[in-house]
Image 1: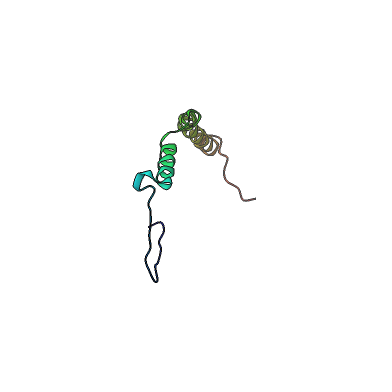
Image 2: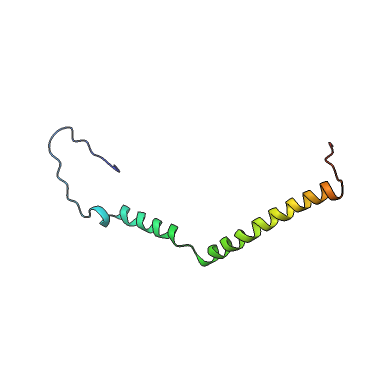
Length: 79
């Protein structure tokens, strides 16, 4: 329910100018859904780049940690 009226006494006369999918709210909802479905080309490019870049950076970080800890015997120290 979006809105409501309470008639305490007497009658209420209403004229509907649009119903269902023809209302302004319904059109706004459809526009938002369409905007969420369709990504701009720059966003699609960023998604493709991050799908490769993030795992590569995490892999390099893990490799750096493993090499420094096991190969070069750099241990953790308390400051």
